[in-house]
Amino acid sequence: MWLTTRYLEILSTMAIYQQAMCATDYLRNKVHYRPMVGIIGGTGLDGIADLIVNPRIVRYDDIPGFPDCEVIGDEGKFIFGEIGGKHVVLLQRRLRTYESRDYSSISIPIRIIRLLGAKYLFVTTTAGGINPLFKVGDLVIVKDHVDFSSLVGNNPLIGPHNPRFGDRFPALLGTYDRFLRDLAAKSMSELKLQSEMLEGVYFHIAGPAYETPATSRMLQLLGCDVMGMSLTQEVLVAKHQRMKILAICLITNRVTTDSNATDDHNFEAEMRIARMKGAAVGRLIERIISNTPSD
Image 1 (cartoon, one colour):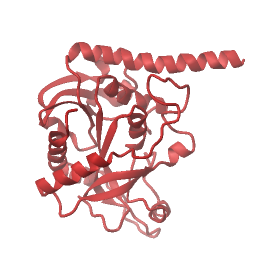
Image 2: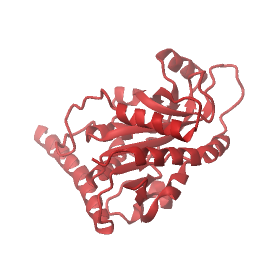
Image 3: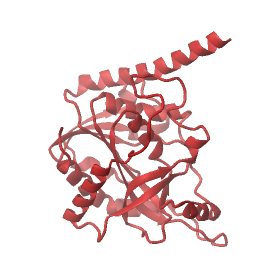
Image 4: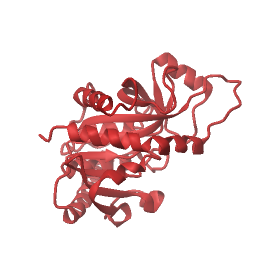
């Protein structure tokens, strides 16, 4: 029985690696350069794609072995090109934890970006504001995160270990690269996007249900500043592969802490904020990439 279980574990880790390598080989035959930066576009922030010079688009469902294409549909694509004079690859339409059959599927797109050669991962996302000083429309640079999903076993790194990806027990100190955070502050100041650069702690909620007011009060006590349904799982995989990570949140709503409140979340209103501020997020990403050293 032990040998059978161990054999299945080995097959599982080989399958993930082979799945990622198969997709990577396919993409390398389509694009003949190594991207320096991988970018994940947040919901409603698709305008980043408009900044890409000489774009080359590859749809997820054209890539052999790409996971959960039936869930994502035709929205999902890799967009290769240049931003700020650097080669980039944009992952448009992320795979979310509440859509996937298992957390390991979420790891594969990030594995592919790293195998393609990207050293940096820039993650953008919309989020709810927990910190009472943060306003709708603010841009927040993530400095740390809290992820209860990982604490209870829903972690994309759980399972058989493949040393070709990274260490068995990756340290998470410095996950959100300080140099990139300082570069983001400098870039934000140059563009005069907002009066001050805000940093905060991100909380991952698995979704798709929104948080309760009691949850919001608890997260305030824990010192969390923003919350959302993505980001941390992708970041864990990128850190596992020794990528340098920058994460930017756009606050599209304020969380409610009053259990007697009757106002409900309005997803369409949140997307209007995202579309209104999407150009600013794109300009910030462009400036940061331009300021990022190539070596």
